[in-house]
Image (cartoon, rainbow, N blue to C red; front, side, top):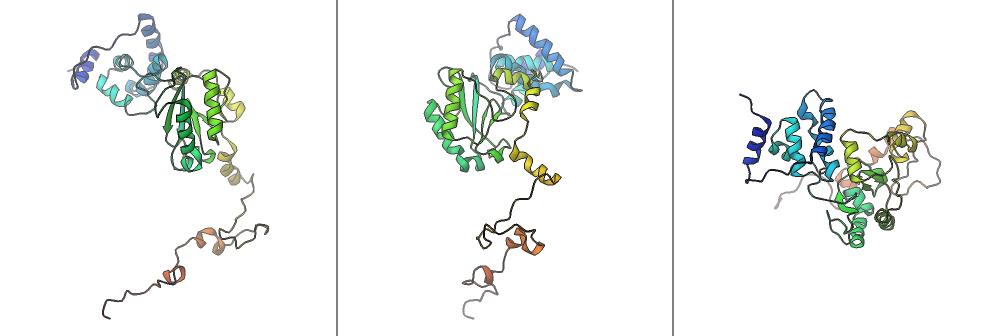
Amino acid sequence: MTTSSSERSDRGVSLGMPQLPAPAYPDDVRARLETDAREVIARYPDSRSALLPLLHLVQSEEGHVTRTGMQFCADMLDLTTAEVTAVATFYTMYRRRPSGDYQVGVCTNTLCAVMGGDAIFEELQEHLGVGNGGTTDDGKVTLEHIECNAACDFAPVVMVNWEFFDNQTPESAKGMVDDLRAGRPVAPTRGAPLCTFKETARILAGFPDGREGAVEATGGAGHASLIGLKLAKGEAAPARVVHPRGETPRDTPPHEPSPAEHLSSHDAPQDTSASDPAHPSGPVAEEGE
Ligand code: FES
């Protein structure tokens, strides 16, 4: 037995509290989105695989994923609204409420945090007058703390609409959000030029805007990310090994360490009697022996 798209959608909604139907898009908007959605769906062998880009598509229309947008996705993909909602609420890149033109994410994962990310986040909250997830009154900036963006070699990192701003300080981050709010040009450290959140969402839906060339021009990856590749290719000299306890003078010419001298040998666990003479290893004596 088959069910229609609307029947399946209604069944999904009925699992929760009764809800009014989602407001419909205006006809012209719906027609435009349907054209785009069909193009995206055609890229996949199974239509439901297009759900993630379609959620970005509806997010590019309204700036966040609304019930109208989720109903649209359900209709286009023959899914229930419950299925669409489950996905939209799982991934943090989908916003569920109106937010700013620029999503400023401060990485507060371990490395960025200790390198200054926590201080940046604290100072930006005070500077902007908003908490985590809050949006400035002018609707320009939404501040949030984010998880690691695999840019730890440039810590502390701030991302604006998923573009990188490397090696930030509280002062540079405050200056950057001031520029965003004032409409002054702001350029990421690397990658593509900055655009608004809605424009970013449309790119993520699978509609490039020609900025790929700019990425090529600026170089997609920074020096710190490429150094390992250059070492592997022999295009860069190995870093000088500095003994952690300073036993090797800093001006000693570098030499190739033998296996016995390798840092991993130094770091190997030692016998307790060597590492802690006050508590030598050996059988534990029973009381009364
Ligand atoms: S910890 Fe911040 S980018 Fe990895």
